[in-house]
Amino acid sequence: MQPFKTQFTLSRDYLAECYDQSSLYGKSIKPNYLFPLLMLVAGTGTLFFTEQPKVLGYILVAFALLELLHIRFRRAWWLARQMLGRSANSEVTLTIDEERVTTQSDHAHTTLPWSDIEQVVDTELGLILITKSSGQHYLSKSLFPDGLVEQIKDRAASARA
Image (cartoon, rainbow, N blue to C red; front, top):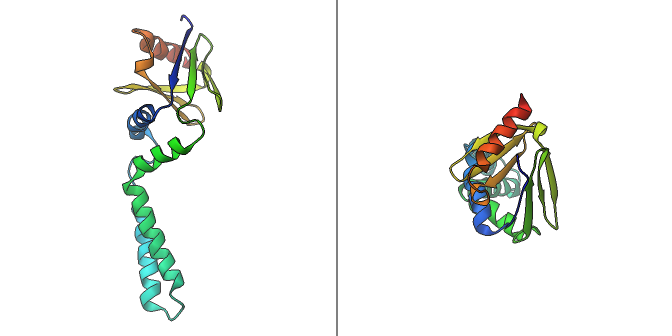
């Protein structure tokens, strides 16, 4: 495998692509409505069936509504948090060689040896590198020249063997 090096910007478009492509393979694919439902029931029950001050009931109902908003606007909330972070709109250098995949910016440095990559998921627009520690790293196919995607998948497969 020939060493490959490129630079890209962590723009809103790149982060949106990252979220859209990797959300299907994440740990929380299906939203959990049970937690806000239980908080809503507990808050309502506290408001109507106890003689205690009503503050606890109102707080539980407010948290339940906040959690429902979080579930509904998950993508927008994630993108807003990323864009408020210090790495937003920064230049990232991606290096792929025979030993590792490395990303480096002013704020972070990540090195993934091929032996740590457990699986490579090929999505429509990119690759998700899943590590042994269950971490996920998304790389857009728009960064790669023709043929490099297959080389990455082959190199990860040979490192696992």
